[in-house]
View 1: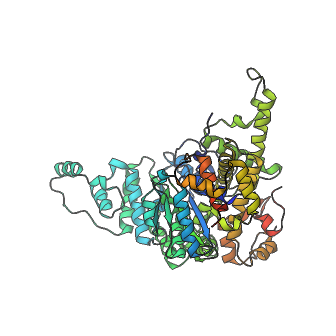
View 2 (view 1 turned 60 degrees about the vertical axis):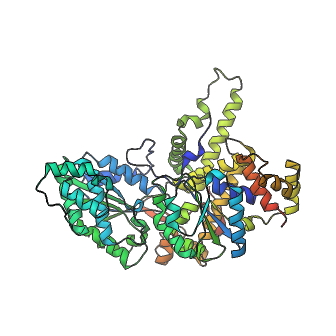
View 3 (view 1 turned 45 degrees about the horizontal axis):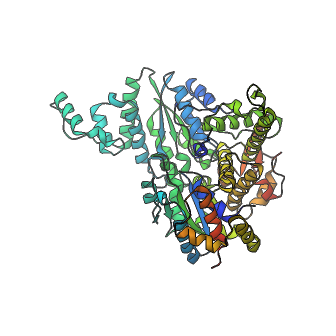
Length: 180
Length: 400
């Protein structure tokens, strides 16, 4: 099965020049997901927030957290400018936050094949993926780490856990299972 | 050996002359280059996203250049937002690319005009260059010539044709497939007709230009040639699977034999059977990914990169296992599911096995552009196939 944390980490990490889409159930959870991604990605990614495709493209060495004001327009612009991400080559991805069933996803399906292809396989819906047996997964997590997800995350957020690829994936998994 | 999976870069097409090109079973680039060399003046290229249009166009430019033609590849989508592109800016970009293609041989006035128009590098305007030009041409008019996109493009074609020993110019235009449908797109395509008969054109066009009479907008009698997704299933799919495996090997910097268990010989290793088994499993996984890709190189590379990512972050393994590939397939299937709209399932079922002419055009264009349905040449006829990642979503069996 695909663990939401691993799927999200994979979508963000796998392609330096990639476009990852994080699907959000509502605007409040969008803000929460943006903050979670900010807290979980490596500081070397130099993540920054923007609503502008132009700004995201102009800073290829930074992870752009693209939070649209107008989802449809942002998707259209990404579709039209996709190949500008090739020159100069990006070293960090663009992470686009779209509402589930919102204008952005509709535009991807209807009008924007290039942007859709760019993100294909890297568009994750953490909540939908998280339709899992949380208690069973928490047990697995505890067996593997010897800690509850909250305790592990507290150490992670306190910079007590080394920033390795494996630990980033575990952090994404932990935040999926975290009791809030 | 430590593998660099990020080198797969599924979204990066190869540049002209870049090492690592693998010819697809269709031999598309060679075919196009031969057609143009033989006198075909206008080729319109279509194809689903990720099929390799940009790589094939770049290779066709490499094949053509210096033979019968001076070939110039214009990657217009690297410089322009296609949603805002105008006919005038298209012609200016073409002029700029032509100017750059002859480097220092471009005339002073054309160079100055193209710098002024903002379509070639500002470094051409350096103070040193300006001083040198002033010394060479003391009586020159100081202001650059200003012309329309059409006049600058034609002036550039004229200069290139005069300077190039091949005489004839071929322009290969990539990126116009991203033009949104509408009157502005038709204006951009129509502007290409203004380049004149002295230039041969190979243009990647939007799908909507491949149906109806849109192709006539550029030049009457243009050839429309789709880049086909290669067959990857069953016996006919063997060359396609081999093609994708070779792409993977090249991108990882490995010889193709790396995935052939028969090449492992027992001179050093005492665990030869284990080594062969490992290679056999890797090969099986790669060929399975090839089948799931539907013959689209980008999808194939995405599947492999995704599976490798799962292997790394779950177990720290260098090579993915079948479960990793299964999850990568599930990720890609999710993307296709989101691209399907109400009515698609029924409409696809209705045209399965036919050439698809009964499907409403806007739906057909949307599904073809994304590779959700694929046109396959079977014998002498065309047939609509459904992408293997989409089939389970429609209640059909996955890949064969």
